[in-house]
Length: 205
Image (tube, rainbow, N blue to C red; front, side, top):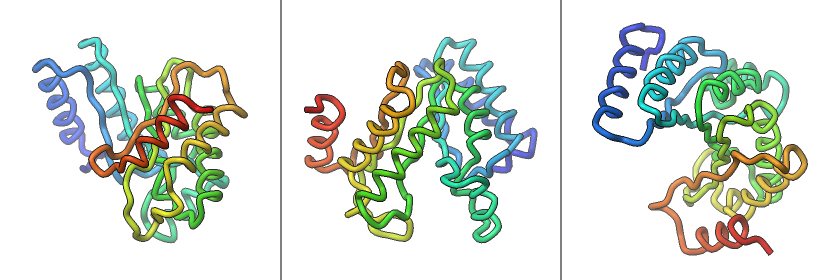
């Protein structure tokens, strides 16, 4: 999508209005890739929020990961021309415009479960710091098992992700109410994934 075009943004808003008029309970957007600081995306969210509020339904978005190091998104974008990360400030700008934000905290290039869990803990903390308490914050769990550049199935596991989310939550904002996890993706999940989710998140020992 060319969000810099007013006509493109207007078409997205009009489509959303039609969907909600048809009776759907909300709208979720996963627009990728999106560069950190994209003003046109923020303008789109402002327009969409007006529509969803008029229908009394939530506006939800999937979000890129947050810079693990200061300004890392700029370095990565320069080297690869792909916006893998957002600045924490931009993440906060997006979070303040929506009712729910889900961090795609997978495809992290981490080679081991311990490193992945630590990375998810950091992402959880950064997201909690930037997300207002009035917005639902969800951390993504990897319910898929591909092996490719950026994702190692033996490292990015549900148990490691849940441990990381719990660690980040406990050390940053343990009393946060509007917080949870998002399971991506259900049709690729194994029974072990569901068991790890239930035992690690729903009813931890």
